[in-house]
Length: 179
Image 1 (tube, rainbow, N blue to C red):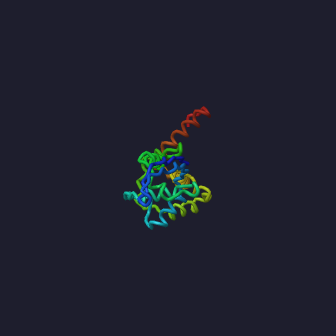
Image 2 (tube, helix red, strand yellow):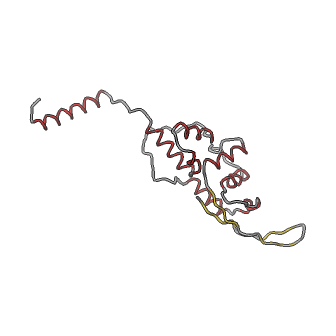
Image 3 (cartoon, helix red, strand yellow):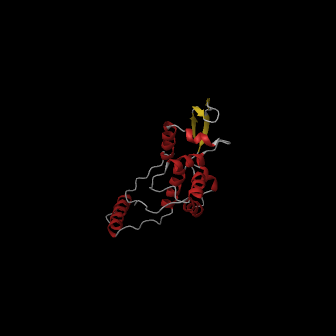
């Protein structure tokens, strides 16, 4: 979860010809499958794509991430560059100690929507409470489930022969025999 503070600013009201100061606003944000689902429902396009988001789409995603209740809509237009950078770092953080070292993993070119991720959750029996986790943590769990559910890789003839040779040598040594 990320906590940010949108600072107060001085603004001009053209109707009254007066300056006024807005209140600062604390926001509690969560980059989760729930947030992405809300955003995709509104924009009707995949959030997790290589395409750049417009400023309007980015601010709306921050709104979808917001857990704080009753936030005035103008707060999102007052987000500072520093606030947006902080949100971006949070979105890109791995949020897990798990790393993948498998060099044979091919990059997946499939476009992921929230429904695809929900499908994976169902397929791997991941409880729906996890939809509120940081998205990168959830995707890591899905990747682990996928790896662990792969069938055991069969050994080549060369590997089988090497293993058998080592086992035979070990047994000869244990039983003090020549063969």
